[in-house]
Image (cartoon, rainbow, N blue to C red):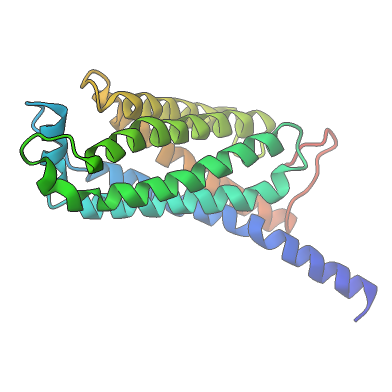
Length: 232
């Protein structure tokens, strides 16, 4: 095998993770939007334990959280794939490194979230069981960190134009902050529950940015370094 052939092969292998990041973001965005849209609600009455029980026994619990788990997994995979090229841009290496870890942890957290409904009987009487406490900390810490991570990624990616642009930046920022605040407080108050629909902007951000990435990669055949060290 000639040197030029080996170089082309190595370059092709290096570009593969970048090429899947766009489609993965699109799938993640659609799944996140759909999962949020069919997420079961509660009666708004009684304690937070009884409200959680209402949602857990709803027939839409599993379909909704299966979609959200798909979204979390695709987000994590997309960020990990994008990280391969994010290291070439000042500041993005740190951002993608931190957010990728949060995304992987959030995927594990959503898996626990999905199967938390198996413990619905235990909280039927309003008791705060181990499952309830795991669910509470999962939402207030892991989910809120994930929302903040998406917001930071959207801002950094939009400013450097490596993930979207200044317009898409606003979608990810608002959606991420809304999801973070609503998740951090849901176990304690209903005051910010209305922010969850606004969090669907995360899904729109992911779809738009994912679609923007694919044509750019197709035209350039991969990643192209800009004169200022950024990526176009």
